[in-house]
Length: 109
Length: 109
DNA sequence: AATATTAACTTACTTTATGTAACTAAGTAT
DNA sequence: ATACTTAGTTACATAAAGTAAGTTAATATT
Image 1: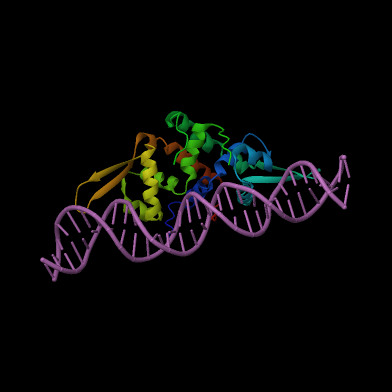
Image 2: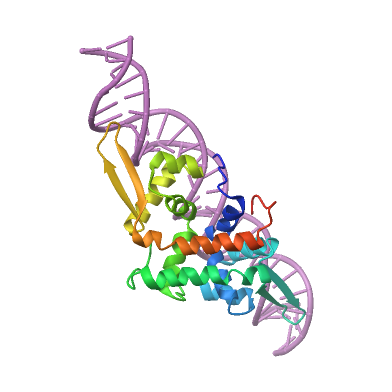
């Protein structure tokens, strides 16, 4: 597969939302820090993939991981400034959805 | 996998960009109608998946397919109004990328 | 007339990503 | 010593995407 690279920054940004679940994870965290199991339950992602995504997002500086040394251990994931800056993107998606997505559209296959 | 459905419209909108390549396909078509092989070459997607995506996007009313009965046949894909309405979404992604994505970031893995 | 060319796909097969469910580690409480 | 809890990880199964060759229909070429 040849990489045509229209605009590298744009493509790299698209690759974030491009991946399954990342949009919903960020959407969740826009409401405040959340724990692993909370995100897992709230959006219905598998732990296996959530773990993978959170590592990616952390590596990209979008999410930060805080460890609270309680028992049992509590770990919270929160958005960084870079992550919070994605709010307008999610909002524009929401806005488009309000205007154009049919109420009855359930699964887009 | 339990479906928690935060906001069905929002989720269904996210599912569009969520899928690999759809963002880039729409980005391409924002510049005007394009033929199958042009999209294929411009973004480096495989024909197999492009065919699949275009069918999905057509089914969702985001893309329309026009057949020109020439020889060999010419088929153009263009955005519908619903599709064009996604421009602000792509723009907000571009804007975020300009502000936050490192120039050197090539592949986000 | 037979062969070649072109666009837009499709098919068969391989590789990668995701889902599922069971398991691990550390620190308590019973 | 055993059980409980969170935050994962591991092994395995299924679904999605990549690759490359093949198909169809209308000419154009030899």
